[in-house]
Length: 220
Image (cartoon, helix red, strand yellow):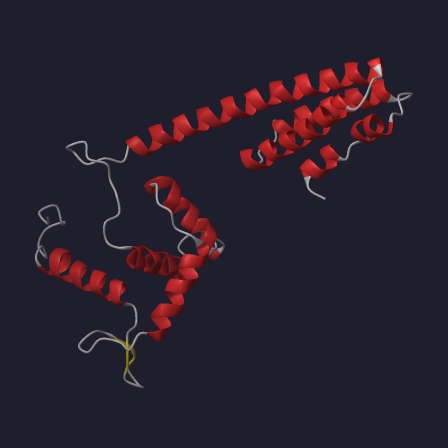
């Protein structure tokens, strides 16, 4: 049972639906405390919205179907609490989006142009696979989805785990390119990592060889 299920199926909700009002005050106080705590937890806003929508639907429908004043009073309190929590979630979401936008705006060129990946989706998926395979993040504990999330957030991309795995399958089906590095010299198997091989060649040509005497500052 998820956090939201626990709240939707709380004692207060059950008592309201059954019309059992002898413990309604204590149940509402517990429900309100639990809901407020849930909204303040570091849970994705989508789950919070989903929980609030479910609760609002339950209480709104029951408001139309009951004549009991006590029930209506607590339903009104619950709906008012839900509205307040929804406003809080939306405000928090907006602050996160503003902070993320400000974070991304820091990644610009000298002329103010936003820094963006322009070397193809296959290339960045290959880079991600390489970083994960090499264990470059968190001493190898980071998974593909973790690194993908990092690139999506920092570069405002729309990469997916499924896309990464599909790109990996396509890499395995490649025939290799003549003249490129060998994956296995003993079996004469040509490399399937096209983008990585191109990057290595560019790094050697433009950084190592052309500026062998310097520190690379002259490389364009």
